[in-house]
Amino acid sequence: MRKLIVMLFLAAFVLVAGNANAFQMSLGPGSLGTGDGVTDVFDQLEIYAQTSSTNNGNGTFSDIGDVVVTGFLPPPVVDDEGYGSYAWQIYGGWTNLGGTVTQGINEAGNPAMFFNYTTGTLNLYASAGVPYDFGSTVGSGDDTGFVGQPGDLIATLTLIGGTGDLDLVTLSGDILLDWQFTYMAPGFWLDQYGNDLSLLPYDIHLMVDTNTDDVVIDPQTGAIISSHNGSADIVVPEPASLALMASGLFGLFGFRRKRA
Image 1 (tube, rainbow, N blue to C red):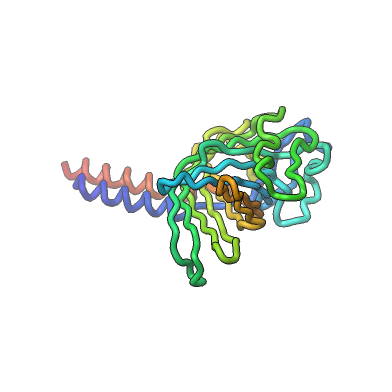
Image 2: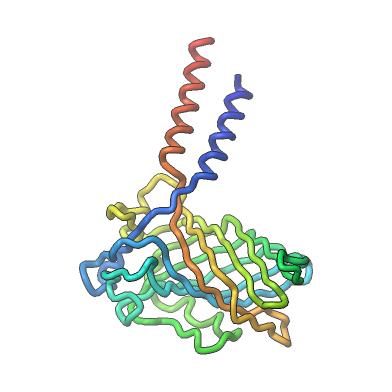
């Protein structure tokens, strides 16, 4: 019976993990904004990043970079609290981002690099004004642009995993990253009903999907310098699946007690 319970628990866990719920959200920048302190509801964060990836030569790579939220999707968001102007901005950067890298042939038949992301920490900040300036071209200096500028820490995220690829012929690719919030500033991250996400009893993830463009290979270091446009969803496990798993397990334990 115990073995059956464990098997059903694992099956329920897979069910929950495979049924994530991406939902609408709003932000509460408070005094940083220009209106009532809360944005309209939207589906996704629109993001832009610039990175510099280094092949460590032992089958691993490391990456440094910066990211800025460029807007909210789908547009238009009427009340964005003056976002993107000198009212306020969300930006951040990551540390110890890396994993393993291999080379092979992609689906287009071109030589490519394949990245498996395994570690990383991302800090996001909100501050008044526009504290970043990537410049008009991609360069190694961009990766020291604004991380550490004065601002309010609104989130810390830990990388759960991710994949990426780079076509060495077209110099383009895609990256998918799964980040889990380990800190959310109270009152900043809200759902569509105005509930504070930092109070939810669930693991909350940020699912990032970007393309890779403007690739430059540094002739001296071999670093891959690139820009990334994409979007990010806030995702939680479906409460219904969690409730189903809990009720199912309690039922099993109750059934066992009756037979004992």
